[in-house]
Each structure stands twice: as C-alpha cells, then as structure tokens.
Length: 204
Figure 1 (tube, one colour):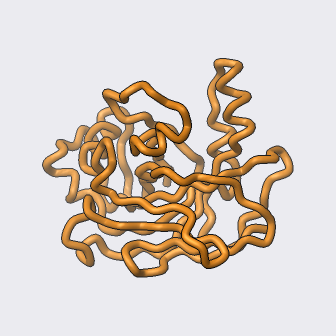
Figure 2: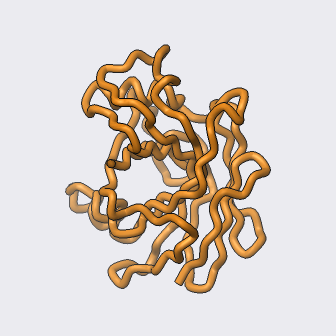
C-alpha cells in the first residue's frame, strides 16, 4: 500500500503558512508504508527534529484498483474514512525549501502518518460535509470542515489516478485546515470525525 497526501488544500492553512499562490491543481506528495502509525500506538518524537507539527486530516481508504478515474465515478473507489495526523518536521521542511530541494524526508519519516479507526462512508450522507477536529489534552486545537477543501475528494482521486494507479488499501490524506502546531512529550491526542472519536494516542 501507499500513502498519497495533499498539500495546501485549505485556504485558511495556506494563509497560516504564508502561501499566497492559488493552486490550479492539487499538490501531491507521498509517504512510505513505514510511516503508518495505528492501533493507538504512541508517536515518538524523532531525534532529527526540534519542531514536529501535527496536521489533522480526513483520510480516505481506497477500495478498488483504478487508473484514469473520472471524477464522477471516483466515489466508487473508496469505502471508508477516518481522522489522521500528517506529522511534519517543520524545521527540516523550512531547511529543505530554502535549499530548493525535495522535502519528502520532513513528511515521510517513520510513524509520521497516524490513522484512526476507519468507518464506512455510508455512515455519512456526504463526505464533503464532514466536521473534524483534534483535541490535545482535552482542549480543541484544530477544527476543519471538508466542504472548505480547495479540491474535493473525488477530484483529487481523478487527478492522482492520471499519474499513479490506485490500489486496494491505499490511503489518501486530504489536507489540513488552519491550526497546525507543535507536539511535545506527554501530550494526549484525540481526533474526531463529527462527534465520533476515531483517533487516540500519546506523544512520547
């Protein structure tokens, strides 16, 4: 399986990060399967970064093999959603950007893709009208609404499948809204989709 992630998919987050260019196409990056963190296992802050940020996202699970998928058919290619965290080594990201090089290492390191329990998409009337949020130590630190995405889930799937064949079990991280921030040892992270807690783990 592979992890496909979308960058800069919420205008509020783009402003937060100082990005002023309007994206005409989705910004795509990948994470290896070793980035997966699941089953409420703790996230250990890596020794190569002094500034790891959480980025809360809705995650979609691909359920069918697909290539060159039309947007109007894309809903047939995923069966479940959850809340995830795209952990980012922000200090490394700044360094790599300043040097003009690729910055996969600040996104794709081990355990950098935390995922919660998946729930069937049929549980929700419309995946583009979902509220999600992250609590740290029982305080809400980030909130999002999937209707605010610059590129909707079906359009992202259509775009990505032009370049990369989607396979059963692949995960799509759909982008983070405003409110990202650093994590520190001892914090308790809990992610919610609507009112259902799907993600629950500690920072070590």
